[in-house]
Length: 508
Image (cartoon, rainbow, N blue to C red):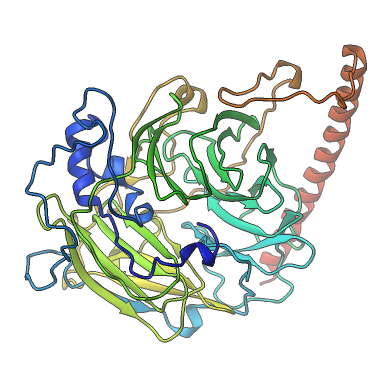
């Protein structure tokens, strides 16, 4: 994350790859082996040459690293000459036909290094240009072609939107982060609304500067992570609107990226201070910081653009999309040397301004599709399909192992108390049918019972009014009454919109 100025010097991107860290994870973090611990690391390790201190007693204290393989010489490049057997060796990318693209979309021009796009099996969301605030557009996947210039937007932020992320456990819920320092969570109806969506389900406030990163917990319901330019990472319970944890004093500079491991027990960050941190959020401690020499180096190009990496744990393939570049390079990660294997490069003529990555359950398994990207141009979105060529029309078990489904494995309170659980997996043998709209219910607790979350220091200003308890109760009661009135009107409006949608469908 960050601005293009922060990307200077990253042209020769020495990518510290998964290989060493996967084996390290299996040896020293029981229960977080391989892809679990390092699911996000390809996206984050954009540096090389640092020490990896680990938890005490694990043999990874600062300055020592017990690698289980011969250490490669510094600067050793990955070889592309070795021909190896792999079912992904012939993966190829292909754009869809023109009538299956999304045209006339004013993609945001804001200076920020996020993907500007989020996609799930039901919807495509894109951050767009908007006057007087921030907005993004949500389109049903089936609504291809030219987008009406009056198509409703999701508005509500008072400054540009910087990041968006669909909830992995509810395809109708999306979160947005903005320069206005807030995070908003939205409920998207299955039908196309007739007006802009302006009221979020909940607004989360806790950052003092712009918020550029948000990421949902992979297994716990309603747990959302945010990171802002105040160098603060906050974890929220969206179901109550509460701040669960605030990770302070862990980063000395701007946070570039954040990612979860597979079961959400750890998270990893990259920072402008050139350090990679593996963090246990519930213990509020850094369990590993930075890394030694990478076991594989790949010089990408001389571009100053930031890499947008996407990792598929089911196939162990990492895709690298350079922002401002016109290609997608992809590599397979293995547990044996040389660990990282170049597969191919998809190239096109026009540069990408952003990129969306479809979850596995949204792919077409009948066509051996293993990945689908949504490439943002200046005025359109172009889906790109990655396919493994196969002659058989039967379901390919080796390409599609069971993959995380839409059901959460934990409640927010269970995770916060220390419980972990692996994702609940589903089979794609018969394809995946998205479930109908499930309403996100937010039950806010009494504000008087709220306690400051662990790790957050709250100051008290002498200028703050000293409300007496009866006066405060009266204000809160009036606020509750007004909210109930607004919610009743919103429900009436929603019912009328549903009826209008039914009339419209009936006349088609």
